[in-house]
Length: 172
Image 1 (cartoon, rainbow, N blue to C red):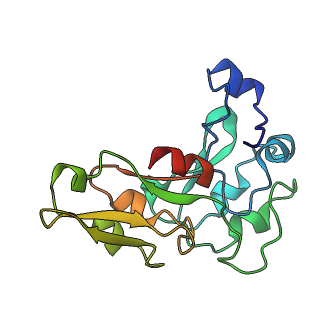
Image 2: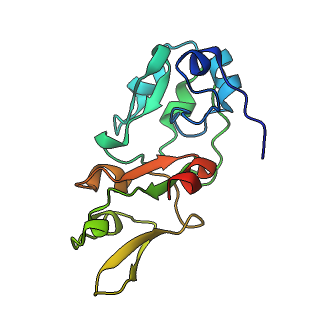
């Protein structure tokens, strides 16, 4: 298992394993570098036309997919003068390492037919596997998922999370 650097803030909040890493805007550098470089100026949040970047814990920017999906426009990275973002080469390649994960509160687990997350997934990363009894359960194809978050706000049960892949496997 890879060693995870835990910030003082994470440690004091009881996250001694570093499992609760906030979702940073697309193209953000690795978390320790991001925290060192980010000046908390809010330029990235103001530049976001989708308004999915908000001021989070400690004043650092976080992505809030309940506001809508990321469009990968690159405006957040373009306005950062502090170097907290990697260079944007292709709007959708390498923006996020994050992927969607379906949690146990999914309506399908209760026998309710719902395909809302898949209907909102332009990348077609959410498929449905037919199960006994005629119910279908959502499956996320991590290779197709771009981490845009369109499925998060669409889910009526708030069962979809976008998170670091290592953590997504633990939730599934």
